[in-house]
Image (cartoon, rainbow, N blue to C red; front, side, top):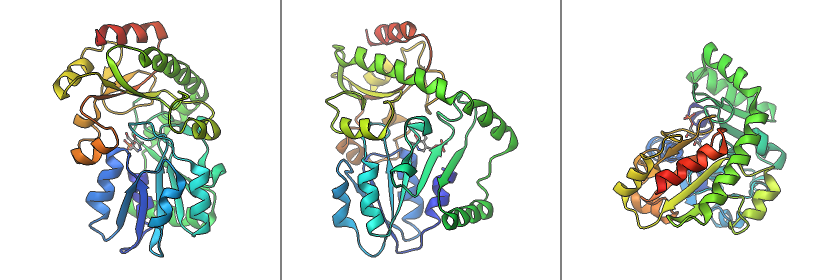
Length: 305
Ligand SMILES: Cc1ncc(COP(=O)(O)O)c(C=O)c1O
C-alpha cells in the first residue's frame, strides 16, 4: 500500500483517476477514504472493454489505475488496449500486477508507465514479508517516485529485503507449480455440485479469456468460487472446514490459502457496490499453493461435503 500511496502522491487536488470496479479492497479504501479527501476524483468503471474509459477522459484525467487479473473476481483488463488510449491522451497508466507476478505478465512491454507489485505475495512467495515495488522505464518518472518514496518513508528494512531476495530466486519454479495446481483445482471445481460460479481466466468461457491468453504466459494460481445456496454464515462455515488450505488473508505464498472476501479484505467496499461485480457473501477466494495436488483436491472435497 506504500507503493500505491507513492503513485497517488504524483497527483494534485482536482486531478481525476479512472480505475476498475473490481479492485483489491485496500486500493478502493485508500482511493475513497484518503485521496478523495485531498480533492482527487475517482471513476470506478467496468474495464472489460478498453473503450469504456473514453467517455470519462477529460483534461483533468491524469491517471488510469488497473488491476489484472482483478481481486477477487479474476476479471481481465486489456493492458495494451488501455495503454493505446492513455498514451494518446497523455495520461499515466499504472498496472497492479500482483496477481500475475512478473513471471506471467510484463505490463511495461504492453505500454504501461508504472507497474505496482505487492511483493508480499508471489515475489516474496513465503508469506513472511510485507513489501511493495514500483517499476518504471522513464527517468523523470523514476526521479519523481524516488523523491516521494524517500520523502515519505515507505522504505523496507534490510531483513525484509533479504527475505525477498531469497524468495525471488525461486519465482519461476513456484509460478509453474502455482499455475499447474491452479488449473487442476479450477477444473475440479468447475463441475462440482456445491459450486455455483467459478472465476478463473484459463477457462475458454471466461469473458476475456482471449485477452488473458494474449497478455499472460499462463493463468496463475488464483481461483474464486461461490458456494451454491449459501449465506454469509454458511459460506464462512465451509471456509473454516479446510485443513490444508489455511483460512487467512493474503495470497501468493507456497502454502494454499482460502479467504472470505466480504468479511475480510473487501469489507471496506459498500455491499451494494461489491455485489454489482459479484463480490457476494457466498464468494470464497483460493490462493492455490505448491503442495501435492492430491492433498489439495482431497481437502476441497472434504470441506465442501
Ligand atoms: C491486488 C493487490 N494489490 C495490492 C495489495 C496490497 O498489498 P500489501 O498487503 O503488500 O500492502 C494486495 C493485498 O492483498 C492485493 O491483493
